[in-house]
Image 1 (tube, rainbow, N blue to C red):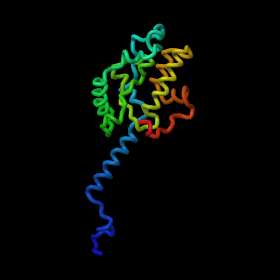
Image 2 (cartoon, one colour; image 1 turned 90 degrees about the horizontal axis):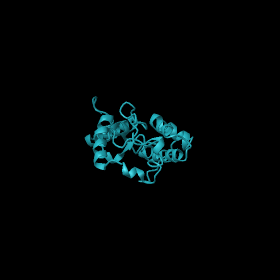
Image 3 (cartoon, rainbow, N blue to C red; image 1 turned 90 degrees about the vertical axis):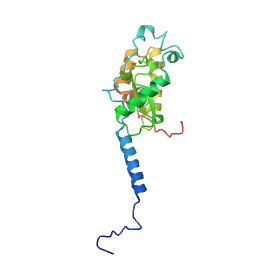
Image 4 (cartoon, rainbow, N blue to C red; image 1 turned 120 degrees about the vertical axis):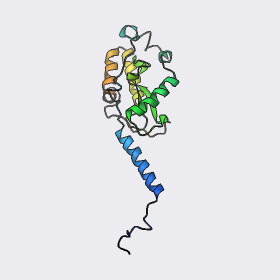
Length: 182
């Protein structure tokens, strides 16, 4: 073997395509590791709908399918999602990998269109969008049954929805998501 020749050449030589593949996979893993289950509270602190109050919950959030009357259009949320994916610095820019989610859900009187109440919530995280939906429904049932106030539910989900999930749904935390539910 020549002095400047590696023992790995030519059998162990890595092609340019392999290097690119490794680099792309590394960037994706860094992005997944950098994404948080909770939104950035500076960007997404949550915002309540001023038209929903404790006094009118029986005419708003506690009415079946009420959220369909306030849900923003997908053209609005998709545009906002793409913008916020950039703002959040996610390296994965595929919008299908995220739900543009209301931090304070519509069923808890969250503001429908305020960007401070919306963020691109990744699907791939253990405590991701599909898990948060379970908490939202539980809190709404508690509010409508008089077990907690609207403000209590809004505060719990806006401050730290994962902690609220532990408190109101499952003390052991978010379950593993198998991906079969897609």
